[in-house]
Image (cartoon, rainbow, N blue to C red; front, top):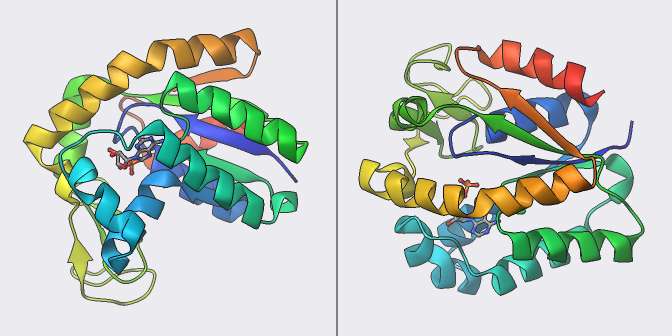
Length: 217
Ligand code: AMP
């Protein structure tokens, strides 16, 4: 199956987790701009040095740079696999840029899927997030623990990391950016009849995956 989706929604609503699960299950590519930036920071590349302070303080990376990274990535991947964009587009400028990129590539987005949870839940979820330092597998202290404490289920590593931008003071800034940008994005995809919304409050990861599959396929 070849499908092209973007997962939008506030931080910690489960976009990344669900994009990872659905991509693995259906063979799609999981394209996360946040992960590209985090990898760049970890490798100490020029891009990483440019974006580190922006990301650590909870701001958005400028559109021109983000669009360039995505364009470059879309030009290199195997589009026949289908993809899920995770965390892009995040501004109306990025929405238009993506639209142009996809037309140039001769493909069309199937759906823009918004996964939402209320703000108090966001803060609760973010406080417990961590991931494997080696393979990047995501976990949570409360909702998504490793099977064996201190050992990654996926690769067996004992090293875990917590994101700098998941600190409470930075979360507030990230949420403000989200709420100020999201409305025109939703309107754009509604007009194109590509907008889908999933309310994920009080649902387990598995329940959200099931609901998403019903919505998407
Ligand atoms: P995420 O992992 O999607 O929560 O992204 C982490 C951080 O990377 C964000 O807070 C932004 O600073 C940056 N970032 C990720 N995606 C984008 C984007 N589409 N536009 C601008 N900045 C982004």
